[in-house]
Amino acid sequence: MARELHVVILPWSAFGHIIPLVELSKALAKANIHVSFISTPKNIQRLPKIPPELQSLITMVPFPLPAWDADRLEGAEATVDIPFEKMDDLKVAFDLLKQPFKQFIADQVPDWIISDFAAHWAVDVSKEYGVPLAYFSPFSAANNVFCGSPEYLFNAPPSPEVFTSPPEWVPFPSLVALKGFEAVRWHAGVYTVNRSGISDAARFAKIVAGCQVLAVRSCNEIEREYLELHAKLTGKPVIPTGLLPPKNSKRESGNNDVTFDWLDKQKPRSVVFVGFGSECKLSKEQVYGIAHGLELSELPFLWALRKPSWASTDAEALPLGFIDRTSKKGLVCLGWVPQIEILGHPSVGGSLFHAGWGSVIETLQFGHCLVVLPFIIDQPLNARLLVEKGLAAEVERNEDGSFTGDDISKTLRLAMVEEEGEQLRINARKAASFFWR
Image 1 (tube, rainbow, N blue to C red):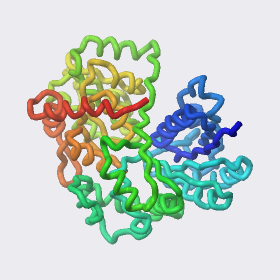
Image 2: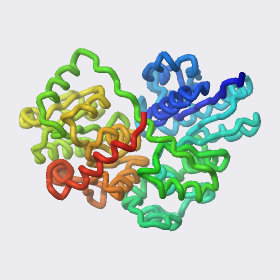
Image 3: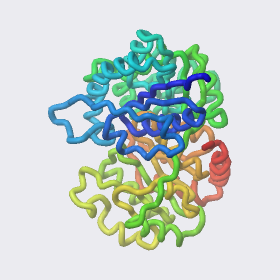
Image 4: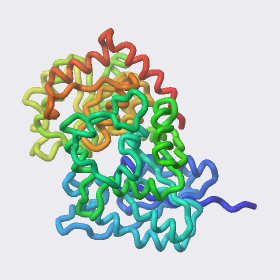
């Protein structure tokens, strides 16, 4: 009898990376492949339970995160737990996991290692023990293509301006590029050697150059030309894993009952879900601009809003009188909400969000039209890809990245109700068929 294949999976400490790799683990387990999934104890505790029928094939392996900062927030083990300026410190700590990871590989000698971009040192470990390495990208193929070949990534472009046009190696028409204010942040954030001693571009380049195969959380129906170009640029096999949507969470009784009672009273596909997650730290001006736009649009909305750090009370998180003025049209939920279950409610027809790839997948699986307002990392590139594919409308911005309530309102109404947005709504409904579970 043939022994089970054994795969070790190592995600970066961000839930946008951890969750899709959990879904990949389930898919592998269904194929009778044993998975050892490595993360920190608190991150593992926060994950949904593995289905009982797969528990014998998925082993959660907790690696304690070394102390990484004198001012470390208690219990902080993932990007969601820290302010953006602490991200580099978390990478310093994550890199200290190399030694326990190396020991685990030496003891287990698995058939494959699957890692995403952060653990660049997984390349050295895989070579030392002769274990093949697969790079898993939780980003879109278009994002990976925009980054270019490993050789390009190892050499920082001299100025941000090069990122404001589609790369020269893209041979087909493309909208995937950055605006001026985004390009400046991208150049600094991706190519600068940070406190961990290595740039994010170099991490990515080392993994891509050192792996045997690349797996991308995408599908041919959305990104065929980018997937094919990614393989050409890297000289490696590129496997689309499918979109790996997370499962619905179960509704818990309590405060959420008010949310679903309200949704039950709305017309089918009439409600805009508004959510920017916990890692997009919006300024007061940005939150108030979104609020103004929702009010101007006169559309039904459900806004999942986490109280920002700049607001000392819940009331300060929104413009004065906003709740009263919009009480007949909208509902604001401060704090955690069961987002996937809300997105799956028949009353929800569209989403206003940041265009992070995980959120794109969560939303598009229900056929919602997308209104995108990107802020950080890969979000702007995903937004342009979605617009290019006729799946989203992007909120207009000024040259400095600012926007107005009018910009929000105009884009929401186009996507949700106006005749000019009908093709967008048709395309989004068709896109729901791209998903497998």
